[in-house]
Length: 178
Image 1 (cartoon, rainbow, N blue to C red):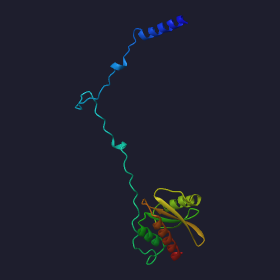
Image 2 (image 1 turned 180 degrees about the vertical axis):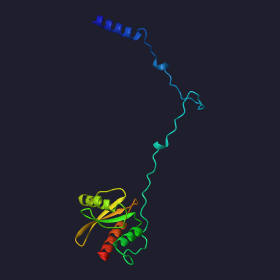
Image 3 (image 1 turned 120 degrees about the vertical axis):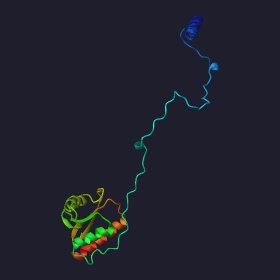
Image 4 (image 1 turned 30 degrees about the vertical axis):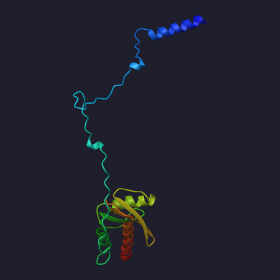
């Protein structure tokens, strides 16, 4: 047993004192303090500038439709198209089309895309009434037993109250002319 203790002690002594191993006593270790002089140091590199694309920009709030203008939508107008022109003017819309549920133009304020809008959005509204398309607002209503779709083209945000007023005015136009 004494022989084993002597061998273990010799191995420990050898491992601690072997050449190439640097031992630093704990009591002689000192902490490096930060520099007290913050003057220019030529070896340091400047911070690279941040590109403007990496800085988040505030999201612009979409413009809301202005208040409706005091325009008559039925009296003194020659036909349903004139009334829809007045509706577009009253609410500052780009275009307004009334389509049947099977995609045909029922009436329109004009514009080159009325037939395309009726075909595309009439069917879309029937299949998915909650579908959203940027720049287009859809609403459905019934007139004399026919299911119709109102197609509003505008890039402005339409408040719910204004949308209800447009729907009411659309029904008034159709009741006046048809």
